[in-house]
Image 1 (cartoon, rainbow, N blue to C red):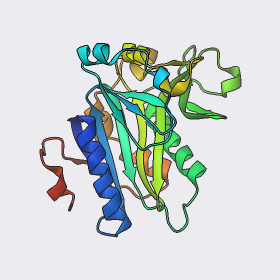
Image 2 (cartoon, rainbow, N blue to C red; image 1 turned 90 degrees about the vertical axis):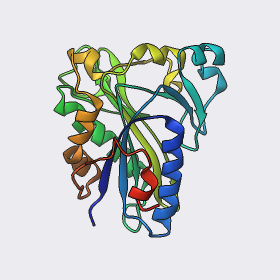
Image 3 (tube, rainbow, N blue to C red; image 1 turned 45 degrees about the vertical axis):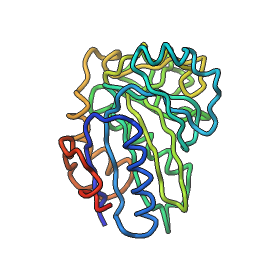
Length: 245
């Protein structure tokens, strides 16, 4: 079975969160196949199950003035930010029977972001004890290991929820996101390392739509699954009928 991949365009967070929940229920009951949603969000701060209120550094009034929503989610992790210029991926995958390994799955999401970063001129890697994809900002075209990085920064975040071995939430890769919005929070609860983007590191980055529509190879290799070509649903207002929900 191949995995369908859908590019949804730029959308508010909460409707896509609801769409994920509907897809998870449908995947558990066998009504839909494995699916990956790719999306670019309007500015939003999301709170994971391990989030700390003090990790939001701005008041709700300041956030509202800057057009940043705040949403509680059921994913793992702390506080994070999504916004324009960031490619967000939500795999809805049934890991049964032979992929029931949370660490392996989280590592596969990091590998997807590592491969996507490489396609756009940045070498990324993983860091023991820390989730996500990381780079050496002092030498973004080379990755050896975190121990020798001169300026370790995070380029991609991961937060997942797995229910009955069906996955939800996923990854967020910074292409050309406004990095000043990360100053509104303590990203993923990490105070001692900064956040970066492909554009900051090498001077340019693809549009999110371009990266999403060309993501099949990285998804296939990172997830070790057969991936369909990305279907563009960015102009479809009502996604439920198209997805069979």
